[in-house]
Amino acid sequence: MATDQDFAHELFERLTVYSLIAGREMVAQGVDVLWLGDDFGTQRGMLISPKMWRTFIKERYARLIAAFKAQNPALKIAYHCDGTIQPIIPDLIEIGLDVLNPIQPLAMDPAEIKRKFGKHLAFWGRWMCNTRFRSARPRRWLAKCGSGCGRWRPAGV
Image (tube, rainbow, N blue to C red; front, side, top):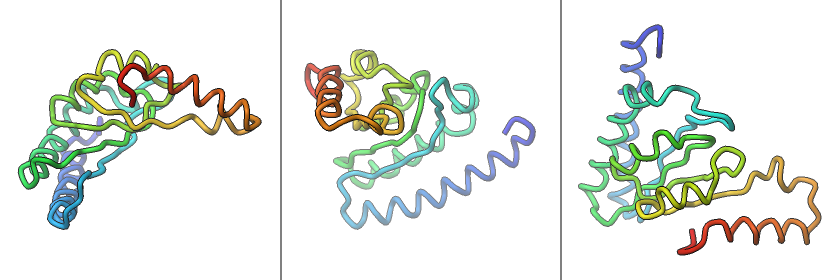
């Protein structure tokens, strides 16, 4: 992306055209929620800079979301992106995202994300099973689930 921007734009455009064709067909078939996703985050930060995401990705996702919602205004758009993506969450809201998945506790604080963006997004989270629960006994696992879910209140997830 940094060394051959023309190639990157062409590649992302082709992926966008494919996603547009496939997504329109799914919307025509009557889906209630359309799932989009790419992993732009790691546990510590974004894989690419927010500026680069805005240059190469944002406008393409905006076109997809606008096209799908024009086809069915009641459609909800869910977006999967692992890791820390807090710098681009306002952009995702701006382009019409409805649901963000996941909010990884090791990457972003669920309570902070809920406080900052909960009026604009629904959250479909998941626990970090690779570190939090792999050796936990059932009672400890249930206790962790309960304490984690409480961080999302009020108004739930």
